[in-house]
Length: 125
Image (tube, rainbow, N blue to C red; front, side, top):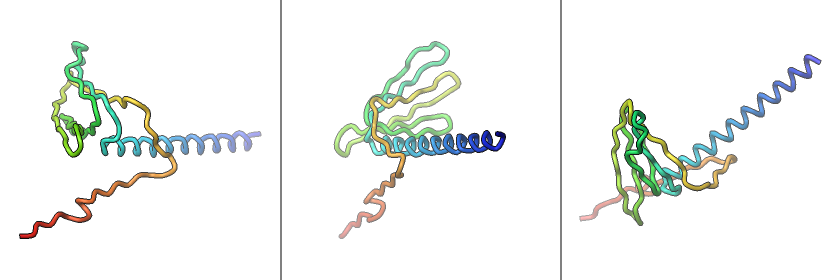
């Protein structure tokens, strides 16, 4: 009986780890899609003391958090972008919300090559 319980616990643990791996792969694929401006986001900055919203950014936006600031880059049209820098403090924070569901495979990961990195632009004089 103890062996059966141990085996069942081992199988349950393995299944829960597999579920975490699926969630991590899906999360990474969704983040990659958002960074490629494929997912609509709403990013809200609010004051934790007053509870008031200070700023809302919505659209096809990528975010780059760092220590005390957040850079938000939004695609505004074909080949056009806007970049915003927002300072964070003890009482100012933000949350980012995905506006609608998106497909994310848990069976494959995603690699994106940017052509400008692989083949550099060459100026001929």
